[in-house]
Length: 320
Image (tube, rainbow, N blue to C red):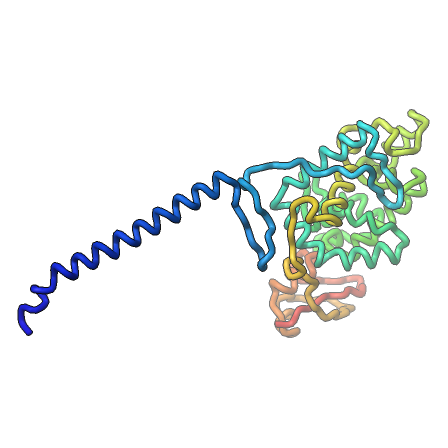
């Protein structure tokens, strides 16, 4: 009926005001409780119904626990000695709190460790030396300011010395498997010259000649008893700290599920014996694209491969 809405308007306004007052009161109560809980220390983070963090603040920083000793290639470092403990602690702190880079290394380890571990084992090189690769490149095809390239950070001259092909069209420093084979050759030669794997790892940083000259000068062939330059002195402890974190991520504050780790991509291997004038067309002919072709074969540096010497190359193909 005309006029009935106007007559009921005051009742509607009152009901609206009462409802608004109730909602405001509840919101204020929730805010007060949340404030009190925050002050009393009840910040809680859940992941898949598990309490990961429950503390008064997310800003608390705790020093990572340093183990009493740690081994590298079955050679033990006695961390009860003050200087060794402090050197390891420095690298453990640096890598534990480099959250972004350390987290991405953990994720990449699921993808690349199986490849690297297989090659190390085949060459009778200790598994721990995969952490040297982590220290060098964070498991990526990095390029350093000094033009060291790839997972194992080879300089061009050294890479060629250990059998890697480098020219305008190919750079096998970007080839994970082949560069790992080359690293194994270097490390085995360095171990034979220096006497142990710790000094072989140090030689990877400063060169075999540099380490050998210090062994001769100081009459010691134990890495932990030698005075080396600052970078090389830190190098092995950086490797060991990364080993500790990757083997004990939760102790260092990293909580990952199996699904968080990157997995190897399924690919097919195609052997070629001649040149390829157009890698884009080659990719299409194998039901993939140029981006994926270069992603899985970063050692191919041009959009073509002349292969004048008719060598055999293996190209990995991910189908789309």
